[in-house]
Each structure stands twice: as C-alpha cells, then as structure tokens.
Length: 363
View 1: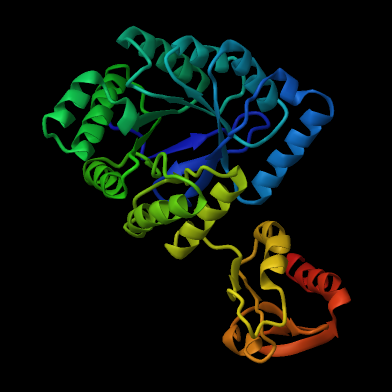
View 2: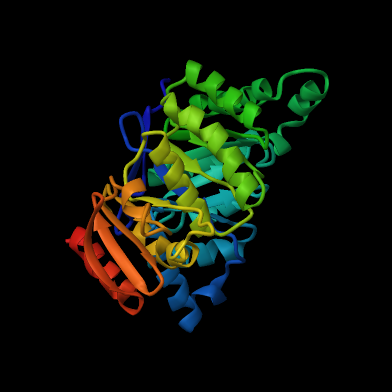
C-alpha cells in the first residue's frame, strides 16, 4: 500500500489544519518543556499559559508537542486541546494506553517510539483508533532508543544512519499490514552527519513526509549551530515537511531558530532582522533594542528586512536595502528606509517612532 505523500494534521472542529508533505510549506514546531498537568490550566496560571501559546502561534509555531507520561497529563492535554486552535501532538513512550486516552480528545497527531511502545498488538490498537479519528501518526526513531537488535548491530559495525532507516522501515511494514497510511517519519541523532545521512537515505526511497531535526543538540549556541548545519542541507535539497530545532533553551528560541533556518534555506519567508554586533564606534545600543523588539518583529507576517545599526555614519549605508532601519548617536536617533533617512528624533521618542513605522507594515 502506498503511504500518503502529504498528511493533514488537525483540521477538525476548532483545530487549525496544517498540511505536511509534498507541495506544502515546511511547518515549524516545538515541544513544551515544563511539567504539565491540570493545575497548569487553572485560574491565572491557565490564562497565562493560553496567552503564551497564542504568542507562540504568532511567532510561527504551527504544531506543538507535549510529553504524556501518565493518564493525568493525557487528561490535561485533552482539556488544553479543547481550548485552543493550535494543533497539539501527544508524545507517547512505553504505554500505548496513553495514546488511546489522548485520542478521546481533539489531539491532532500521535508520536510513538517503536523502540519502547511495546508489542505488535499494542501498535495495532493505536493505529485502529487513529484511523477511526483520522489522526496521523509520527514514527519517531531516536538513536538512543533503537530496538535492541539494531543497537547490537550498530555496536558490531552497522552505520547508525542505516539502523535508523531500518527501524523506520520495520514500523512502516507494520503500518502497511494494518492499512494505515497517514504517517510522518523522523530519524534523529545527536550527530549532524548521521542525522543528514539517515534522512537522505530515507528520502531517496520514500515520499513519506519527514519531520527533521537534530536531537539532544545542546544549549543555545551549540544547538543552533548543529541544527543549522543539518537542516540547511536537508531543506535546501527539498527534504523535510516539518522541523523542530531541539535546544536546551526556551520554546520561543527554538521557534525563532527554526524560522531563521527555513528563511536561510529558501523554504519560508517572513521578517529578516539584521543588526550590527556593536563596537567602540557605536552610538546606539543595538543589543538592548534588538532584544526588546525581537519577538514583536517576528510576529509580523511580512517579508521585510528590519535593520538595527549602531553607527549613524555607516548604519543607513550598510543596511541600505532594509525596509526599515534604526540607528543613532548620542541622544539623536535616525529612522531610515532603503538607505534614506526619514526621521531624526530624540532617543526618548525612539520606541514610539519605531512602532509607528512598524504599524504601517502591519496594515
């Protein structure tokens, strides 16, 4: 049975639809990092959570995954799914019954790990319920949780990339046996080279949508570098339907990193922020201003370049192609467009003037 070349995640009731696969834009996603239970949805804490999730959507989050370690967290995730339109993914390890419980709610996708989910019969139960609910499944293969025989084979000399693909193929055979076709596959390692090799091998054989990323990639700088090295190559070759940049950092930074990688590889548009690193000539605090405005700039759904430059002499020149730029010296601030100064103001007016110009793009 041929597997679907694209799958719809969500698209039922109030849940927004995201299409993964052939011909569709690459979707950015992240995974919730904090403990999650019913208490997190109660009162002011719950309101703050919903507000943060809305902000994640505006930053470009199209899919959000939650770990489901027990039945209480499955119920809490179901309660959250009833309140928001963002498609939620339940991440299931060890206990297939947790997947079945999640499917009592408007959960948009189930992720299972073949290395620990259990017997063929347990998989069949999950696939039957997913088929009934029209919910796709991600086969999530991780280097750290390969089936035992494949781990032994790697120890005996099999390339890890081959083992990752083999594990995915075994699961696909089972899905084919049960006539389940709405599948997304991921094969992740902490090594850049092995992540690239596994996904390239798989993409050469199958047209199944791929979720790509480097797992356990490390803290912010190291993780961004490793993910960029792997994902830029894969995305530039047309490989990948959705990306998650795994970082030991915030979900917001994971999304921003994913967006920048998609932009750099030509797989997405959006705001491009350029800013100088600052030096002894700087008359404008680019670090402070960029940090203050970064998230709001990323919420603009526009293909524009915004420049934050530290030198009033070189700023408009070096960033002359920017749709909007800001720089200054002393207490004097300059706003410019396409290299031409449009406003000269006092530093006390900088934020208000910058927002007024941004509002023109938002219209």
